[in-house]
Length: 261
Image (cartoon, rainbow, N blue to C red):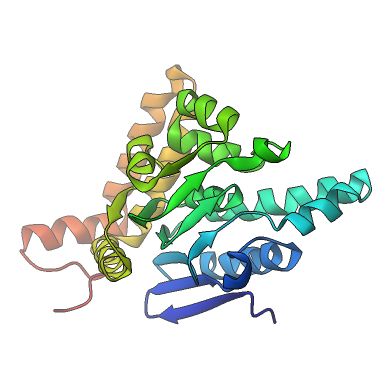
């Protein structure tokens, strides 16, 4: 079992930690494989929230350059297969039915921004720096691009992808990459805990369905949108969870999925 990525569980909350602070939590084969394994484990569990964080000064510097160099020197099939593993890991994170929160305590570059972009919520400290730095190395942010473009939009991606510029947390928030900026790590933990508490007030099946709604609606032909969305709300109103939520509100009590005060 790898010590480079670890999973902690506490009730309905799972936390995955990148544990390579000496190399700024950079990716290699082992990190990507372990991330994929642990994210899938959380996805298939009863957890309702997944928090993703990094140890040390950096959230993640993206790919370990020695790893990238070795992959570039391998055969075409192996090279493509390796890139596909990273893409699959990010896709599992992005499509997780649980709410996902990136706890960004430091700098995030390249693939680190892929992890942030694939999460629903990202909270960062003021000192964090960001950048799609691949072009400075003669590379491109290919595998992370679907998630990053979805998060920041094509217009901003044009600027950031082609310049490779570094930007601070305030700009990351303005660009839509970061949800909230806080002054330090103490405030970061408080903000993450507050976001976790907000999620846990909500029906877990409704959270998963809301995320699926976001994935499906933009890709549907206009002629199918109304039928799809009407069917979705009808299904939620008729669901056990939906009926419980409405009844609890009318009866002025907490729904069954909320922990008692």
